Length: 378
Image (cartoon, helix red, strand yellow):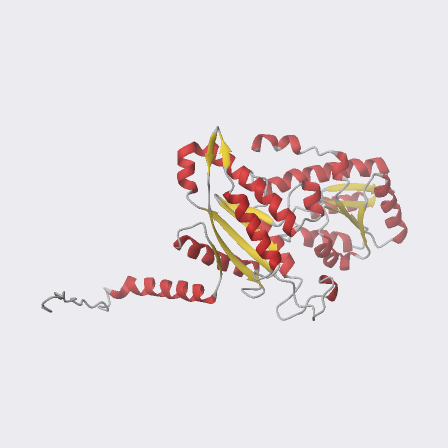
C-alpha cells in the first residue's frame, strides 16, 4: 500500500474535475470570468462566494477541495482570511490559490507569506488555471492519504472519522431541532435525526495474527475492510467524496483490529437493525487465505446520538464501554450502551484508587469465614 502512494499523486484529470472548487471574489465581473474558466476546464461543482468576511461560514458548509481566493491590496480581506485558515486545524492543509493582479509584486510576496499554495496573475489564463488546479488537487489527494487515511485499508483514520462525525452532530446543537427538510416525509415534529456510532473489535485476532503471521493478518484486515465498506456504503450512503474516492466517509479503522462506523437510525429502528445484521453476517462469513479457511467474530459496542451523547467523543467513550461488556460475555456479541455501564466503570475506578491507599491508611480488615460441616453442623 505505502509503495503505491506516490504513484497516485498524479490523479486522473477526469476524477479531479469531480472536486468542489470554491471561488471567493468580491468583484462580480472578475468572479464571473474565473467561473467561466473553471467550467471550460471541466469543473462542475463550483461554489461562488462574495466577500471574504462571509467565506468561513460557507467553507464549513461546502468543505471544498480547493479555494480560489482573490486578493487585492491595499484591501487585505483575502489575505487576512488566508492567514485565519492557516491557523485553523481544519483548513491548515486546504489548497488555496490566490488570484492577484499580475503586476502586483508586493501582493504576491504578501500572499506567499500568508501561506498561499499557488499564485495566479489576473486577468486569468484558462490553461494556466487548469494546470495549477490539477497540481493542487493531485497533491491534496496524496496528502489526504497520508494525513486522513489508514495506510493498510485506505479507510479514514480515527482523527478524520471523528472530525466528520463531529461535523454531522454540530448541525444540531443540544436541545435544538433539525430543519424540517432534513427528514423527508416526516409527519411528526422534525427532531434531530438519530445516528448510532458502532465500534467493532475483532475477537482473538492476536491469536490469528500469531498463527498466520503479520502479512496474513494484514490480508485478513483488508478483506474485512472491503466487506464493511460494502455494508456501510449500502446503509449509510456516501457523499461526493465517497463517490470520487471509492470509500464511504462513515467507516474508519482507528487502529489494529478495530473499526468504527456511523449508522443511520435509532438503535431500535429497523433500518439500524438491518445494518447491524449485515455487518455481523459480513464479519462471520468464512475468510479464505492461502488455501485455509478462517472464521472470526467481533465484539460490537453501540452508542446512539442523541440519546447516549451529543458529541463524537462522548459516543466513542460509551461505545467503548459497550465493547468491554461484549467481551465480558465471551465475545462475538453486540452490546448497546446503558447508563449502568458508566456507573459500574466509575465505581470500579473509584474502588481501584481507594485500594491504592487502603493499606497505608489501615482501611482493610481481615475476617475469617467459618467452615461448617452440613451433616453435624460443626
